[in-house]
Length: 458
Image 1 (spheres, rainbow, N blue to C red):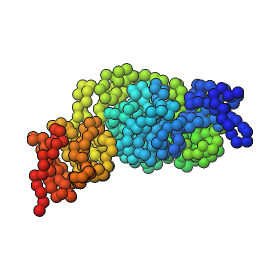
Image 2 (cartoon, rainbow, N blue to C red):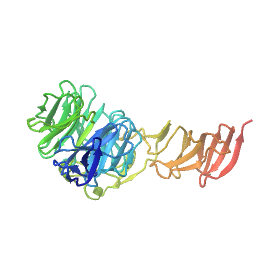
Image 3 (cartoon, rainbow, N blue to C red):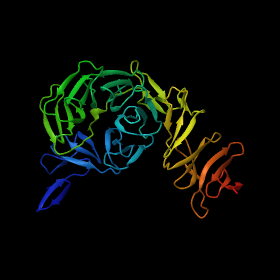
Image 4 (cartoon, one colour):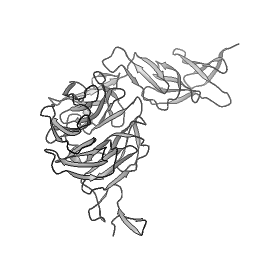
């Protein structure tokens, strides 16, 4: 009698189940496409929960999740996005779990907050560890640090693309809720001394901001988008309301103490309903529905005419073309920096610019950096060279992470162990020392061919 799947259970019992994208109706047999459903992040799982049928949930089969923290979605292409504080990455996949792709995996410390700008097709995140709020395109490119000054412990983040503002909670000091335009300007504190606010959610219809209070008396609170008219929605019989979202006339939250997901009417906290039991440590909740991603601004069409980032501004409906950190805007295009300092750490290479209005230091998006031993830069071809201590090889890449290749292979019968390197940009030669052979070797930059040994130790 099942419309999709019939699964056997011990004791000669069976239960109906649905394929991904459907949920079981109240009759227990029919599978239907829900108008809306809850998405949740929980440790090693990303899942979905029925809004209409209690305790009806399904895990989305995404791979590689270790400790999911923040979660959001893009209704346009049916993708979900999440941060992982253990993997230290931002990942996306389709709502059915297919095509898992890490879009940001460099320079993240503790990415606790995440929000998708569905109008401009950007993604924003708050990193509590690095004390930064950043933005990038939905594929992770054109990454830019927006806020790094006067930011202590940025946590939950929410966007209002129609009005061109972003909101976030900061757990530093006595706690605050803050606001800035979506290009990072006009930063101000709208709520001070709020303790640990989490689960920031914008009600786009009634223009209000909801959040869960984790410090002192646990509660769900609300205020106007300028921080005025703050009030409590519900505080009775609430343990630790960590995750929160809003849909139509209801507020939904996950309680870490009880492991439950509940909802109440958003105005006065009436009609409290239990939706799910025994789902502990849910770190984020989102309602997957078109009403949560409506609106328009000048970045909606053709990326606002910008080559990299289009960041909307409030007021007259203007937009700001922005560049990746350290790149300079000329009209609507971006140009790479020409004067900078490069420095390496064990598994990263970073760029530092001391006289800039941008964040002074950023990691370069180069994959598979392991035991970086030495670095060099070719100003002619704009390639970065480094010694990989794990493979005992010399590799190169552009600062965008593209055109990665091996210049001098390690291992093999030669037993080369590169220790340091230097480039002669005029003769187009790479000089590098070998710790085992006690030699200085020369390699052509053009094709990687070896010219031989120029110095040999005694």
